[in-house]
Length: 336
Image (cartoon, rainbow, N blue to C red; front, side):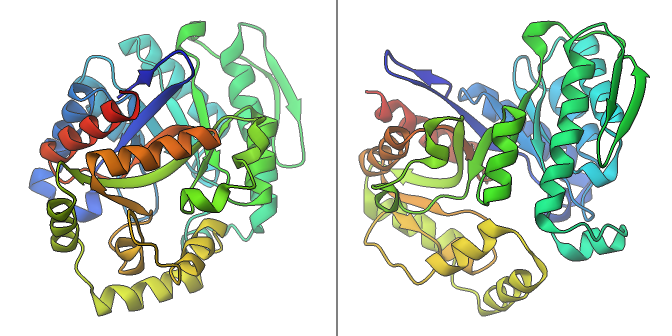
């Protein structure tokens, strides 16, 4: 699904299953399956989550690389977990061992309880300021053979050198949440792609994501079929209304200081006919909006997002190969 025409190009990333949601005996197979399906249906890469409740994303990345030929892992990086040198060393090592480019999805927040457990009380906006320094060190280490010295508010390194070197074509892409002003400012400072949990495309009629001055993308799920009635039937069967899930979502809102979470919660009162759908989010089945409908209808909505300026799409975890097949058809319709 790395698609392009004369006007623009887009990149589509799938998402790797989480170890907390898959039986231990099946987890490695599940990772391998989704990685291979993603590559088969043309995804640029695959997002690999990180938080306190799941296995280490770098070990999952190694497994995914070994199961594919060209898929780019998009590895979630939480600065409180490791020094920026360690991240740079992982990127350089994987490039050396596998000739594979790595993307980094920088995580500023997550659940406040996770951060508190790690004794990290840093306020929301300060975490983005810290991230800028963090990524600056990573990029300088990977950029060349010169030793890196840096002194900021949060990090200091002195004559630090990275070996093995990373070829320019394998230099990592950087993603970060662009939902808050602090996140958007960090994206600009880091030269990163700002990822949003989008509103319905009509909500952007009088604005553009990030002012078009930076690369922008969205996190969205897709359920599409040739017939819209079939698509909605699949959607309701996969994401039934769940009162327990609704209560869990309310609790999650209380322990998260993520701006995108608040924005989607407020959007829950908006009911459009088709295809923007927040029921999976409201019932705590996933953390992003869905687009549901016929191939043509969903493709038209994606085209509207592309027209606004979004060029990167991160899909929800695919439940089966079939869903990536149908999603691939949608993106073919976008540029048909």
